[in-house]
Length: 239
Image (tube, rainbow, N blue to C red; front, top):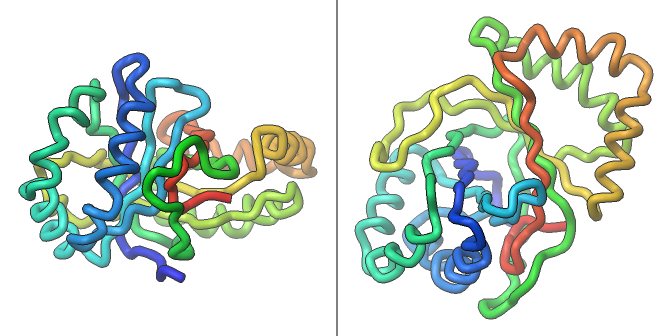
């Protein structure tokens, strides 16, 4: 079992139409073990069900110093030199990145499928992103734990991990990150139908519309983002 990573990047890439499977094949074949060899953890890589031209992945580090060293070693090393042109050719934008620290981090096994695995991994990962007003960011985790989590539990939603913004300076400025206050939670579902049923249960839960949603709105800077993701064949995070 891998210990939770103290620093996590949530990375979302906008791709050229039709290029996603090209990037996934290259990523799963060449860019997983080679990143981990220099000190990173590739936690999961995903197709976005609601955007066929989006690739989403999670990458973890032991601390910000290790992040700087590992990213420098990888992006300055031979593997990225060999494959960067092909990877970058699939991308329109790769700067949609959140730098996060865990409140409750991911616990993952080391059972990654072997190189050459194709298709999709099991399950649907839902990532919910709350963009927070600065004035309410400090109190939001308490509100979520006390008011939101009990209703999610009653709706059959098991939270895998929760994260907030990591405020340390970006130690590798060649890769930009979004500088904003966020709260992020992850949950795994068996499939789309299972996720839809749980969300319907949540909508019907006593107190959700009457209490939680109005209070939630007071914390938010922008709209809630929901990513519905299916793991790639080699994603460490899957059902």
